[in-house]
Image 1 (cartoon, one colour):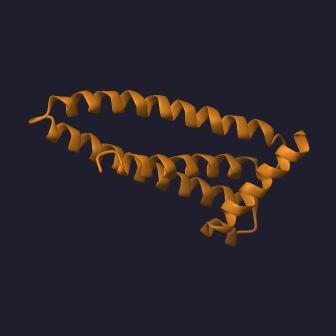
Image 2 (cartoon, rainbow, N blue to C red):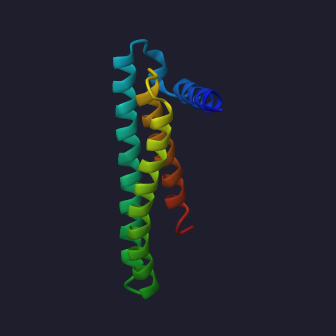
Length: 126
């Protein structure tokens, strides 16, 4: 069972790598550096989206007190989501013990979660 899970994780990492500019690199060091930069960019986009949403809710709060309540709840939800994302990706990292794709797989997990959350936040007010 463990080998099936590990194989699935490797396949997911390979798929993520294929859709990334990092797939062009050969050395582990270059791949890790590239994936780390992609993760930082994904986090920056997520942070920008989150801050824009908070600003919008604060602006709406001038006429709608429920928007201010939603803003505070969203802050709490984002903190809980960040803890979930880390723990979820830590679980994947634990499965990849000793593999050369361990760190890139972890970073791609973080990127995937960030992109999904960014889409959720973009649809929050729509």
